[in-house]
Amino acid sequence: MVRNFLVSKFLLSFLFILGTFLPLKGFALETPAKQVILVDYDTGNILFEKNADERMFPSSMSKIMTIYNVFQALKDGSLQLKDNFRVSRKAWKKGGSKMFLRAGSRVNVEDLIRGVIVQSGNDASIVLAEGLSGSEGSFSDSLNENAKKLGMDSSNFLNASGWPDPEHYTTARDLSKVTIATIQNFPKYYHFYSQKTFTYAGIKQNNRNPTLYKDIGADGLKTGHTAAAGYGLAASTIRNGRRLVLILNGLKTSRQRSLESERILDWGYRVFSNYKLFKPRQIVTHAKVWMGDKSRVGLVLDKGLVMSLRKNIIDKINIKAVFNEPVPAPIFKGDQIGKLLVSVPGKNQLEIPMYASQRVTKLGWFYRIGAAISYILWGEVG
Image (cartoon, rainbow, N blue to C red; front, side, top):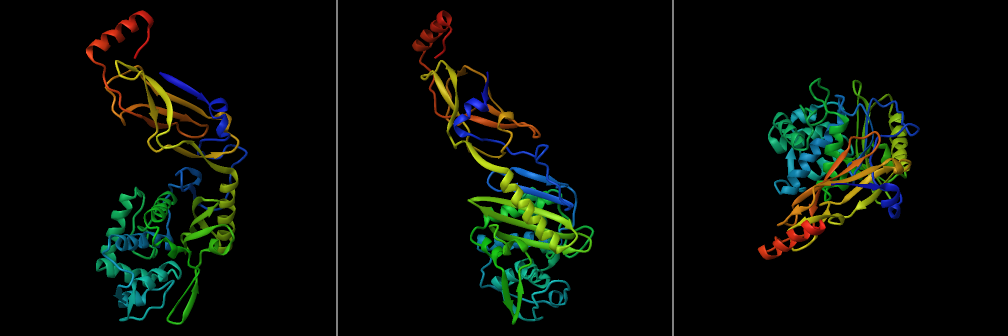
C-alpha cells in the first residue's frame, strides 16, 4: 500500500513544513572559504556545504577534540575541575599560542580548560594531555578512539594542540560532528566556550572567536590558523531557540573569517526555518488489520519529524507512506509496519520507519471464521 500525502493539502495547517536541503538555484551561496559546512543543530540537516569532506588542517580547531576528551573525563568522574597537573618542560617550551605556564608549576584543570579555549594555549593543551594520558602521544591515541566513536572517519590526530603535521588532519564535516557532540553531551561544561577573556599569571588574553563579540547569538567555539590551513572557525549560535553550527576554513585573513562567519550564519537563519511535521508517537496514518481484535492500527514515527525547510520549496515536497496491508494479527506495539518516504529536490530520498502504535491481539477461532466469511462476502477485513 502506498499513500501519498500532497503537501499543499495534507500539510495545509502546517504551512511550510519539512525538508532540509541544499540551496536551490536562486538561493545559492558563494564563499571564498575553502571548506564549509553549516548544520542545523536540532534537525541535523545540512543547510550548506562546500568541500565538506575534503581533508584539511584544523590547526587550533582540533583543540575542540582535546577539550571533548577533557569534558568526558569530567563527566565520568575520573577528573575534577579542582585537580591540578604539573607543567612539563615540553609544554613550557611549546611555541605558538600560549597560556604562559611556568615549567614545574602545577595548574588546576579549570584554568587549563580556559587556557585552551580562551587563550588557545598550546602549552595548556599539552599539560592536559600529559595529565590525562601520561604523554601527548597516548592522549592522541585516545583522541582518535573518540573520533571513531563519533563517526569522524576522515580524521587523524597526532597531537593535542593542532600543531602542524601532514598527518594531523580532519574535515569540516568531521569537525561539525565533535562540535555538535560537545554541545549535546556536556551541557554542564559547554559554557567555557563562551568566555571572552581570561587572565592567568597577570596576563590577560581575549578569545579570538569573532562571533562572540557580535550580536548574533554566539556561544562558542574555537578559531584556528596556520600558514598552511589559513583562517578557520568552528562557531555555534542560537537565535529564537534555534541553534546553527558552522565550520569554515581556508580564509586569507582574520577579518575575512569574521565577515564570512557572520554572513553565512545570517544566511542560514534567513533562508531556512524549522518546522514540526509529526510529534513523537503521533499517528501518521492507519493500516487495516487481518484477524485482529481491532480493524485498524495506527502507524507512528518513533522520534517524530522536525526538519529544516527552505522557504520556497514547500510545493515540491512529496511524502508517501508505504506499507503492506492488511497486517496480520497479532501485532505488538513498536513493530515496524512500514516506512515514510520523503522526497525533496536536490536531496536523497529520506526513509523513516513507521511503527505500530498499539498492540492488536489475534482473534479467537470462532471470530476468525466470521472475519473470513465477511471478507469473502464483502471484501472487508477486521
